[in-house]
Image (cartoon, rainbow, N blue to C red):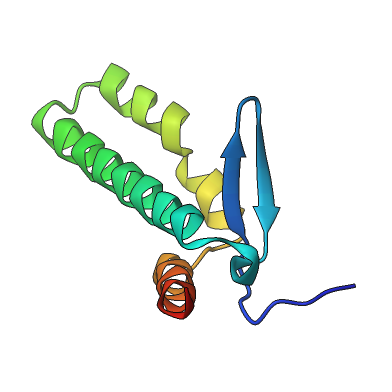
Length: 96
C-alpha cells in the first residue's frame, strides 16, 4: 500500500468519472488544472451566497441547500480543510 505525504488526494477528472490520486503523482499541468477548478468552484460558491443575500425568498434558500447541503448534512460530514488542499497542490507544483 502506497502512502502520500499529503492527507488529501488530488482529483483527476475524466469524462464520466473522477480519479483520486496522490498529489505527488500529478504533473504540473494536472496540479494547475486542480487549482483552477478549485478556485472557480469557490468563486461560484461565494457568488451563490451573494445572490442569496440579495434574494432571500424560500425558493432561493431551498435551491442553495439542495446544491450545497443543509446544515444538518454539512455539520455531520467530514470536514475538509480547503487551505490544506490548496497548500498541498502548490507545494507539489514547486517541485515540478
